[in-house]
Image (cartoon, rainbow, N blue to C red):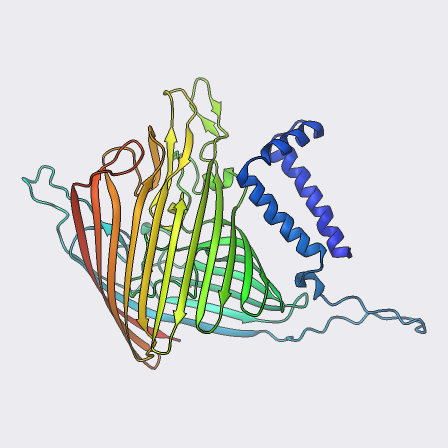
Length: 484
C-alpha cells in the first residue's frame, strides 16, 4: 500500500469516527459499535457502505486516479547531490474557449398554465376553474410572450495538466434568473473542474444532475426539455468515473440539490434545509455503455432528507424523522444514418428536485405527534425520434408520467403536483412535433407541443382514482438561436 493509499485509509478511519461520534450522536465507542451494527441492517445503508468500500478497494489497488501520478524520481547511487526533477505536464499552457448563443423565444399557449419566468418554462395546464363564473372556465384563456432570457455565455479552460491528468474547467450562465423576482439576471448553470486520466476521471463542482444525460435528453424546441416527464437541473457534486473498457464506464456521484431545491415542511426554514439537515449527500451509481451507434445506461439513486429538526411548541420536540427514497432509471440512444432514437424510463421516489411530479407525504396520529414521512412515488417514460440532417431536421417527442401516491392516511404533502385533498393530477401526456432549420451558426426552431392532464379528487394516499376532467394546452414555440 502506497503513501496515498495509507493517507486514504487514515482519512477513512477519521471520517468514520467523526460520523459515528457527531452525526449519529453516539456517547462512547462501545455504544457506537453496537449502533453501527444496528444501522447496517438497513438496506439503504448497506448500499451506501458497499459503494464506499468499492471505491476504497479501487484506491488500495492503485486505480488510475493515483497510479498515474508521477512518482518521485529515484536517487542515483552515484549522485553526490541528487536533485528532484519537477513534473512536466503534457499540457503546460491553458487554452481558453468562449462559447454560447443568443436566443429569443416566442411562446403562444391556448390555455393558462403552471409556469415560471413569465411562461418561458411551461410545466402543465391548469385545472378547470368555474367558481363564481357561471360555468365559464377562466383558465381557458390564451397567452403569448416573447423573451430573450435564455441567451447563454460560457467559458471553457483546458489545461495545464495536474496530478497526471488532463484538466478542464467550465463556467456557464444564462439570464434566466434564480427566481421570478429577478428574471433577466445572470444565473450560474455550470461551474466545475474535471480531471481526466486514461482510465478514470474526477469531476468537482456544479454541473448536470446524474439523471440528466447530456447525450440523451429530449431535444425539443421548448426550453422545458421534457419536464415534468424528464429529469432536469444542476447540482454541486463530486463524481468519480471508472473507465471499465473502451466503451463502458461506471460512475459514483455524491451531490446536493441547489437550483431546484428539495421541498421543505416549514416556511421558516431556509431553502434546501431538508437536504442540509440530513448531512448525507444524495448518492448515485451509473453504468453506461457508449459506442458510435449505441448509447445505453442505467442508474440507481438514493436520497435521504430530514425535513424538520425542531417541532411543535409547549413543549418543543426534536424530530429526527427522515424521508428515504430510491429511484431507478434506464435510457438508450440509437444513432442511425438518417434517423436517431432516444428513450428513457424512470421509477422514482421524491423526485420534485428534478422538476418532476413528486415529493413526500406527512403522517401524524394526532396534532401533538411528531410527523413521519413517506416518499411520493411517480413513473415517467418518454420516446423521441428525429432526423440527423444538419440543415433541416424534423423530430417528434412523446412522453407520459403518472402519480403513484404513497401509503394511506397521509395528513400532508410536500412537493410538486402532490396533495392529500382537493383537486390533483392523475397523469400527464405530451406529444411535440418539431422542425429545426439551420444555416451556418443560425438556427430557427418551431414546435407544436400538446400537453394533456387528467384532474380529479385526491385521496389521503395522494392518488387520483377517478379523474373527472381532462384539460389540455397547445403551445406554439418559435425560437431563434445564433451560436458562437
